[in-house]
Image 1 (tube, each protein chain N blue to C red):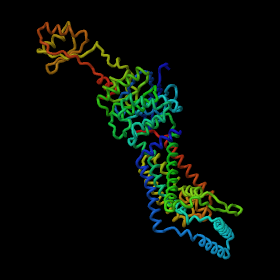
Image 2 (cartoon, rainbow over the protein chains, first blue to last red; image 1 turned 120 degrees about the vertical axis):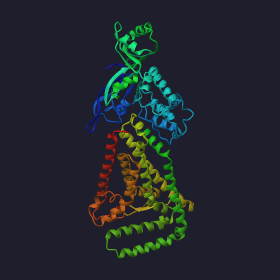
Image 3 (tube, chains in turn blue, orange; image 1 turned 90 degrees about the vertical axis):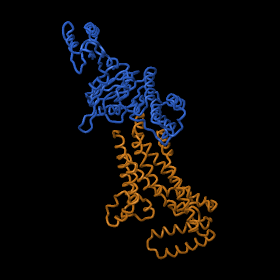
Length: 306
Length: 313
């Protein structure tokens, strides 16, 4: 086990009746990293998270947090964890402050000073003594995060944390998680079915599909495009001539023609020579557009949703 | 554990409904107290000596015709107590505000009803509100969390009983300038000597003895709340049991002997003090054993379901 690994999943399996919901997932989560669990609805993200925090029993395999087994040493394992599972649910008839007291009473080493600190951190000073039923969803989310951070957990687990947040709220949350990971070395685990959020938030993305771990990739690796094989769309005034020119030697490029536009498959290095050849043959070029596979396409490809 | 209990109490007493129930209980006591004061005023206390003397006369006459030696013994003890009261100038309970406190125990079913409400919501609401998730992902075992909730329900029940007790005393006390608050409780010990005891202590023990049913409906409501995660189901079923349980049991007890193994046949422990068990042959130890078995079964069911359950959407 790596020194830095905080949360370790080994062959984790969940069965409900005869149905297997999670198939032998193994995953190491290091300190100071933001890890995204990504997958379409029903892929098992929430189930996996619920198993990590002991809300759901583990059928096979084991999960350890700082070496303590979640199943057998629950209290020891979970004391390092701050978690929000699904929406941050509060006692609406009590003030935000009382909700915080409720959480603080159940956590080790939280005093009044720390509570005020956390309230300031999420910017709720003004509203903390109002009843939670007067809060907006964003304020509840912030209170939820304040609660989860009270005991300075070294693992923060957030299930669909951006649900119901406005763009400003999402940005705030993102910056916040980044700071926690970079400055305090917190291991952050977030789940989402929205890739665009993950892109901006996470260092690594674990892709789930039908209860299986498809791939774990760093974001750079996912963003990286293969330059030896790209697709370019050409808009020219004489497509037929251009087609003839490109498919012949010396260029010899595979090329299709559709609705007066040419679609060309080639390596990135070849693009200037193609443009030069066309210009040299007096063909007017209106547009040269490279079709890159977006992260979204890759995600859909990996999760098999097409 | 103490902090878990504090949390449960904070949640319970932050609710409007909890305060409403406490207020309703006090209002009920006040209403009955005031109405009874004018409707059926207490007997004239200045006449108590002559009344007690008349009672003694009647009992002495009664003993002569009483064949049962046990009843004779009881009556002799009663006479001793009354003579002691006359000799020491102790006004009997029925002439003092304490009599209302004693009658107050007939309001315990109302307390039961309120406790059913509290117990029915205490686990189920956490599921309904979704707060169960944040409650269970804290470093405390589920068993401890459940225990804190149960203890908090029992504390609420005890609080209501104390309120009922204090309110009945205060209500009639106001009408009588709190006279006779120090009236002792008279009883005969094993040697047949009259002893003085503390009246408040004696009456409150009587409240507790009458609260066995309260304990069980609270436990049942708590169990249904945990098992089915529905407050309305817990409150509905338990209220039905509270309303019909005792009545059905005593109706069936006339015909069927097996009724003695049912819960509600055993909850009125005071029937042994009065010497009239529901079914011939039932004894106090028998009832205590039956009650313990039911109690264990309810608690085990609650505990097993709550600690093993997967918390899903």
